[in-house]
Structure formats: C-alpha cells, structure tokens
Amino acid sequence: MGSGYRLVAASRGLRPEEKQHIVTRCPSHEGLCGDDPDAVGVSFYPLPTGRLCVAYTCNAGPEHTGRGGQRIYTLVTVLHADGFDAFGCNPFDVVRALLDAQGHQPQLKPPAVLPTLVLTARFAPDPALLAKSVSQIGPAWVAGILTQLLQQQPIVVLGSFASLPLLEAVVLSLPAPLRARVSFSAGLRYSLNRGFDLAALDDRNPGRLRQMLRGHKVALLEPQAGRTEPFDIDCAWSLMVQRRWQHNRGDALIAFTAQGFPDTSPEALQRYGRLCNRRDQLDQLDPAGLVELLGQHLTECVADELAARLAIGITSDTIARLSDFCSTAPIHELIALWDALVELWQRSESTATLLARLIGSVLMRATRLSPIAAAQMAVRLVRAIQAGAPSEPVQRPINDLLDHLGEWVYDQPPQRASALEPVLQNWGPDGVLASRVRQVQAQIAARLAGSANRQ
Figure (tube, one colour):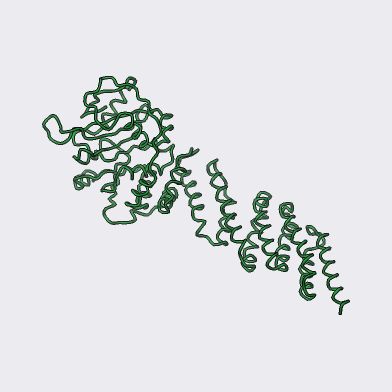
C-alpha cells in the first residue's frame, strides 16, 4: 500500500528494488486527474525482477499536511508471470479481484506487514461496456493507439474518451503474451518520470500537458479534436482490430487475443493480422475473387501452428462460400468459374483432395442444369488427369455424371441426344473411366437406332 511518496505497508517477500520501482511509478499528491472523491486510476507495469505490478489508486480524503487537495492512496499487487496468466493476462481482471478481496475503501492505518493475498480469477470483462467505449472514440483511434504501441512509441491519449473501459479494450486487443511487456496508466496525471508506454487521462489542464510533452518522443492523441482518422494505419494487426470492433465482433477479438501466440514479433503479428483480415473480408468477395484468394492462399508457406490454424479457417470458409454459391448458381456462372477451379484442383495431390468435394458438387449442379455443358466441363477434368493430376478424388462425380448421361439420352429427342456424341469423343480412348464413356456412346447409338427404326 502506498501513500504519498512512500510505501506504508507491504507483504513479506517484496524486494527492495521492487519497492523502489513501485514508489517511482505510484502517484502522489493530486496524482489523480480529478478531485472528485470517486476518482480512480489504474496502472500496470513490469518490475525489474520479472514480476508484474497492478495498482489501483483512489482519493482518500483531504490532504492532511495542509497543502490542500486530496490525499492519494494506492493499493498494489505483485504477481508472478504464471499468476498473471491465470487472469488471462488481463490487468483489469486483477484489479477487479483485488477490490473484491480488499474492498474499495482505503485502509489508512494498515499493519506494517500485510498478509499475502490470494486472488481468484473470476471477474471477466464486460464486452458491452468495452464495445461502448470503443464506439465512443471510434475503432480507428483504437487501431491508431495499437499501432503506436506495437512500434514501441510512448503515447498519451487525452480527453474524456480516455476511460478505464477504453484502456481495457486497447489492452485486450493486444496478444495476451505481449501484454506483460506493456506499461500503462489510466486516470493518473501524466509524469514523464513514470515512463508509461501508454497513458490515458482527461487532464484538467491540457495546455500544461502539451507543453510538458514538447521536445519529447511521446505521441499525443486527442480524439476530441474532431479528426475521425488519427493517421494512416498500415499495420495488418491494427487493421484487423479496427475491423472487428467496427463490426461488433469485440468478443470474438478478445477470445482470439487471449490464446497462446507462438510468436509476437512485429513480422508475426503482421502475418496473423493479414490472415485474419483475409478471413474477415470473405463476405466482400464475389466467386471469382474467392477463387483468386484461395489460389493465393494455397501457395503461401505456413510459419507456425497459429498461422496454420488461421490458414485452415480461411480455406474451409472460402470453400464453404463457394459451395453455397455453386449450389444455386446458373449454368453460365458455373462455366465461368470452372477453369479457375480446375486449375487450382490440379496443382497438387493435396489441393486435389481438398477441392474434390467442391469440384464434385459443381459438376453435379451443372449436370442437373445442362448435361451437355456438364460433359464438356468433365472433359476439362479428364484432360487435367491425363496431364498428371490425380484421378482418385474426382472419379466418383465423373462416374455419377456418366450414369446420369446414360439415362438422360433415352429421354431426349434424337437430335439433342446426338449432340452429346462429339463431346464424349473429346474424352479420348485412354481417358479416365473410358470404358464407361463407351457405354454411354453405345446408349446414344441405341437411342438413335431406335428412333430410326420407328421412322
């Protein structure tokens, strides 16, 4: 527990260098942004020992030295990395557990040695509250703040939007393993000496703050200034965060960032962000765009397990959307898409297996709409197989097509049935299921002969 410039009480095991660091980071007289008795602040930072500090600051009545203003009281908890992990790497969950265990009222006369606290991780964030705070400032500002943090640029967010829920939304937009490296404060008057990576505050004297920051490499963002786009954002991770908050998917974003990340380097975050953006933008693509995206995606190397999971998600979603489209598309749209699909299908044995069901469903849809067009499409497959593509994944839909054609010719007038013969001749004597093709050709001949005999 801190009061003024000193620790007035602490648990056993707090090391001297940790105490010194905590005293430096804690606010003192008039350290909160407001004199309101209900004003509070939160801060979080790593300690030199590798442990982590979460602090809650509030006003504790009038200053007793006669200087005026409010007395400042800070409740501090120190966690090991595994303890922080137990709270989902969310400092605000730690604050909620801390206040539940200790209460909101300052302990102005604590014992010199405090008992060790056992905190329970059972206080989840309120997604609706976080979404509201983001909507008030605008998702573009959250993306801008994140971009600065990921570039290791200290930043101050100034204005009434700089609330605790907003800061929690920003922190939870970072990958969980990265949060332990970021220091921040909210609701505390800014001081260069504290050296926070991110400070969010509604300063009573913004001019003083602007003057303080001049000449220092600290970015100042003022959302109330009226600009809706803080700056150009070329960080794929930040753009992913912006898009998900913008489309009311903050809960999905928080679930995603809470998982383990095998790599949190800038290059890895760019890669993860780019993959997520691709998946999020599938709704905006037409079928040709989906096929093009699938083609680009299947050629990329997967760097790690998380990237592999994201890649699998993109592939499955893209194929599902193409399947939905093809299940209702008219024949001319199926034909327009067919060559690009076959081109992807024949790239390798793995892509042939991956796309076999989609290829089969497109062929069956075409068969119901126009058997002759479907036969022409099947010839494209046969030629690809003759060029070396694997035949096994598509033999069944081709065989089903031939079965359908064998029945179809008996229900058609002779001229229409005969139109199928030149298509089947393109099959080639050594094509896949060539013997079955010859049976269909025999059925066509029988149909034409029967018609001639009746005449």
